[in-house]
Length: 225
Image 1 (cartoon, one colour):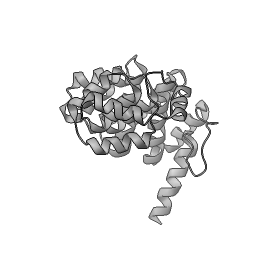
Image 2: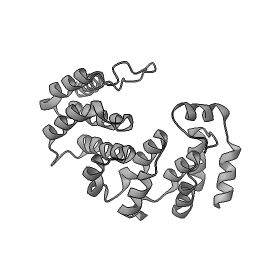
Image 3: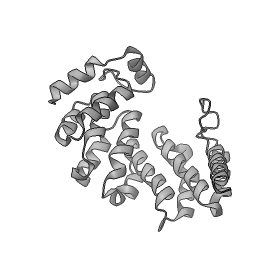
Image 4: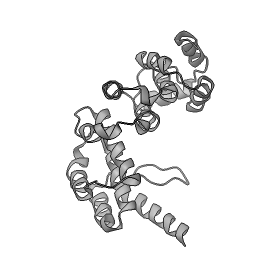
């Protein structure tokens, strides 16, 4: 598919309610308002198309960028290109899909993780903390957990909202995977109170770190028993 054809396909799936929902959550007007499931369906149809993905990203259209994250080939991106992409993010759903489908699979993600955690660009810092949260959960060897907890305790309350989300995830992952540090992680969450009153749908786990940690530890204990 060409860029023109792809944009036409996205436009044909425009949904007014989705458009309004995106705006409510901070999106601009450069979008069609396509449901996420419909974007995934189109991505499955196109499969992998790196060049088209880069063209879609350059449009700055939200739906086009979300589609781009599904069809891009992360390994073809240089570290510089990866940084340029993350620096241009302007909407939370873009950040979520970029981190999940592009950044997580990049072979040089560890070379940018700590640098990005210290970035003044909130979306870049969010990505850095997202990588750190993932590493705490899957590859914690070599991480200074005490230092991470110190940073979270002193910085999360004043961090941009975009960054708080993945810092909080790192805090929860530490509490879940490190029994030695669990009490401190819970205490930090209680003290900061971030996401304490976050609305949660029935059947979902609260992002409030103390609840999140206790719920996941309980689930893991049930699996073992």
